[in-house]
Image 1 (tube, helix red, strand yellow):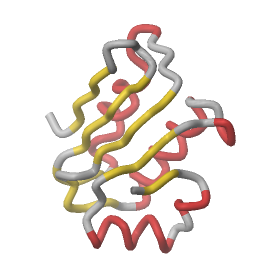
Image 2 (image 1 turned 135 degrees about the vertical axis):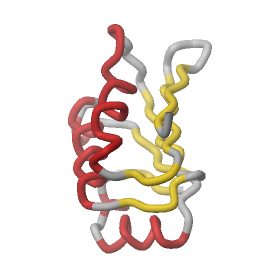
Image 3 (image 1 turned 90 degrees about the vertical axis):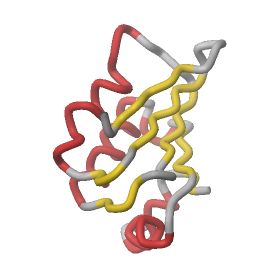
Image 4 (image 1 turned 180 degrees about the horizontal axis):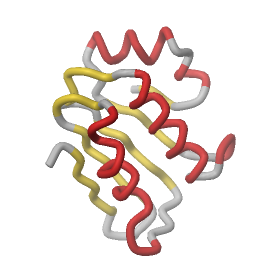
Length: 101
């Protein structure tokens, strides 16, 4: 599965790891990763280490996660982006909405 979610032992941080293409085909799995079973983490980490492609639908999914996590008050980090993914995020001005590492 291209999307894997892991909750920290204290239940405060949810890490969502995306592998391969982050596009519309990942929509359902990505949404289920953060909406499943009444989870209420305070922080979210989106790990794009194994992501080789990202498109506009993925950007929309990240915005939906941001809304789910509290909008402007959301604590979301996007980590381990390769150069191409980082370029898409930068062009879209996502560094103003997310912490990108």
